Length: 111
Length: 113
Image (cartoon, rainbow over all chains, first blue to last red; front, side, top):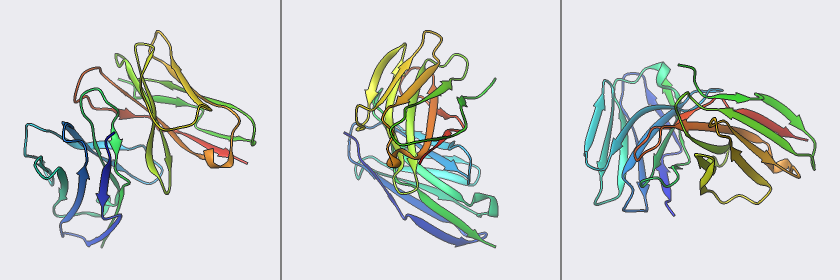
């Protein structure tokens, strides 16, 4: 089955700087890659996703890049703000298979 | 449109007891999946149901079971509770189809004592 590795497990950045979280997946057939943000005590919420026919996708300060050859994808957050502090999860899935999550990255924005 | 609703939100059970958690998906969503979240293990997939049939299953013991009703509502049951079952249980729903986004409920916090 699919295996997703996520790095780093914790990340601290100065407010206004950029943050990058990386994930690798094992199943080359995976074709859907979402990112979820989970604030303390709240549900995970989708912030951006990408499909395998696209190499990059942006939504304001958030972007995701996908390298199918290397089987890795990354989340980029620019101009970080205090409200970006949360745990971020990447995930991968092929077709109707289960969605497999990474172990999460705790991002802390330092004012 | 109402989101995914899970009940109960918090519960405390004793070792050896059983528990049933309920999930009402977003209206029109026919796929429901369940995840266990613990501090050290992230989001672990339990199972997924679509049209009352289990479509995918994670690597959990048989004590964990689930079902889906004709109105797409789902329940999961854990029998013979163990201390290690203490976790946040998240339900998520989605429309059918590939590349579908899943939307999570607030979860049910289970504490086993």
